[in-house]
Image (tube, rainbow, N blue to C red):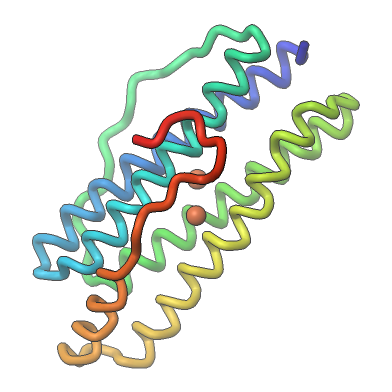
Length: 173
Ligand SMILES: [Fe+2]
Ligand SMILES: [Fe+2]
């Protein structure tokens, strides 16, 4: 049993993870349109990860007896200047997600809600990986600048990314 306040906060965050999924799916199509098939793959894999994040919150909330609420979704940005621009916006978004996860954890600690604290542990670790991946790509993109050859090299690297469903994930979509 979790409090109504806690379940409302988790519900809000669940919708933010779904927003993340849609944000990266649109970015995947933008990268494809730029001729960057590798980056399109990278963002598509990220989209699938975000769907897992969303489903983890959904499953946790329903396991705790909550009925979820989903607001109408907002239109997503679909114009980007470059791959660097997309990666910088991805990092900024993930920084926001990290801050939200930290706030949720803080609330769970204050409410002495141990189950929710344990549930959120996975996300705390995941956010380190997310931010690190984005920072790494931003650093490489800054190194190569506007050189087509350099961007294509990074694009080839991004083509290698493979979706791996986390162990015990509720839904491998
Ligand atoms: Fe996420
Ligand atoms: Fe991840």
